[in-house]
Length: 281
Image (tube, rainbow, N blue to C red; front, side, top):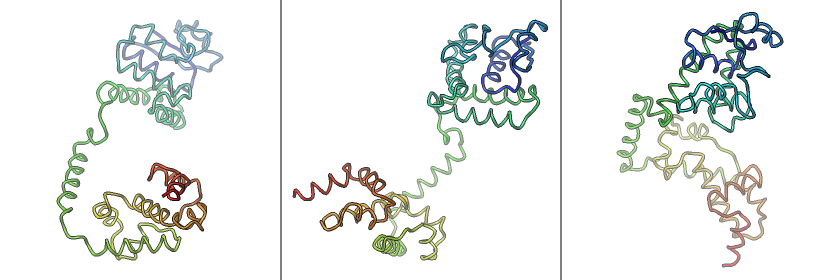
């Protein structure tokens, strides 16, 4: 059978031909023409038009043409195709909140259309994308990245085991130096980066980043810095001469709202609530 739609296909107009070829009509032949010529050309070629207004195979309400193909050809029992339909619908109608994969599908489709001017070549490459998406939807959706990469999973396990073995060892001298540096920088209201610290300690920054959490309560550098700033802020709150805005500044936060958000994450209370409880003691 012959099928026809608008030229320069993206998303729905690639997804639907892929669906037709794989599940409906293996001998399908596709034609792409300017939008205003689709209906006339469909009569001339005896082709079935799709994904244009006022034809059977089109959008209905919030659903995409891909949705209609599934319903029309009794494919809604295929769970992988149903998962794909949500992604296609979300990407094709700019409702990316419906599926986290939709934004990626739109970006890839737009990029392909930008790079490839021949519509049939674009369809050929696009089919590979939908083959991959179908394999994911059919076999891989419960899996995480490390589950799909045995080599990376092994490396991760080796690293975790290494950390466990190292925990009983003596704390390196640089840990005490680093704690002092962090505190000095906060007291001076300076910003500080892990690169600056590694330079000052004479350590490789990658090594320091990797080893940091082993000696600082399983926190990365940013988390430890926030924790130290919050502890400093709590001490300053005991002095009623400081306003909360001043405390935010003195502990290195960019502004009061940033300070309030991080403080609440750390303590479960806003700075004003926390200070009020301090005064009630």
